[in-house]
Image (cartoon, rainbow, N blue to C red; front, side, top):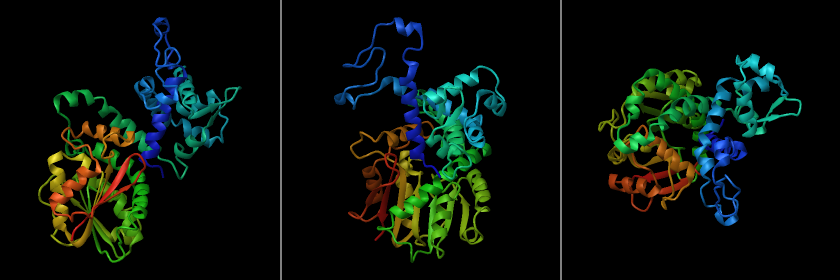
Length: 395
């Protein structure tokens, strides 16, 4: 299944391509304006062309990228990619009008944008085919499909929240994840959309931590903010002696339990949900009981003062010799990228105005303050350019 990294890379490529392929000269007003030049860039383009300018911003590509994103989301919502795949390719406009229910000229406009952004290919006789990546990632019958994540979570939820970024930056006022997820429909949409991508990430995390953390003798795992339970299902499925308790918001637990019911019977028996707002100072778990505490995508989703408290609670819950795994969107300690980790942290601001933009040293410093062993913290790249894994050790 797809991952957040693939989603982000595709959206950035689409945005940049669409901006460069015609939007620059889209109106006579711009055509009549004085030419913009950056070094030897072409007139009316801000895209760097010289090798020495590759580290400069492509203003158009960034500014117009949202248009390409919406074209992609609309294609998913209208079933364009599935319709072309179901027909075996070479689908004409009338056929797509029938399958989508849109007969007005605007459908042609959307298809042209998808061709320009390379999601679709158009033959000389007007037939449409899928690009290789569209066929792999955007068709629901593909085993690599993650269009539900793009459509439901990114397109319907995060995209609209980002529209409030300027107001949040100025006022510091934003909904918390707890208040956002108090709406059962929002919680269900988010949790379902996140699940498939999280399963793929969980499998990758198991491989990445194999040389640092052995679960062969582990019996109890605590999955804090575990969402659908994807990580718990993967971990317990791989290690039959392991059980996992998931701490989550009530509305998320409701959806998580429906997904749990879809898992193999032995996994269902070893995974349970407990209702908890992770910002609560008290967790409904005993001290010193767990071999492993996992926090995936939770540290960047709570106010900054809560992060240290989360790690302190994890320390109390762990057995001596236990491990805390913190997996999240992070930038490098140099605070200059990568882009994916940086803009995901910025997205979190719109639902967590007082949150911490994560970097490994910020996580490690709070682990040490919570009591974890000095000099033993490990940092690993997870989803390249997006997430990192920091492991804390309890002596």
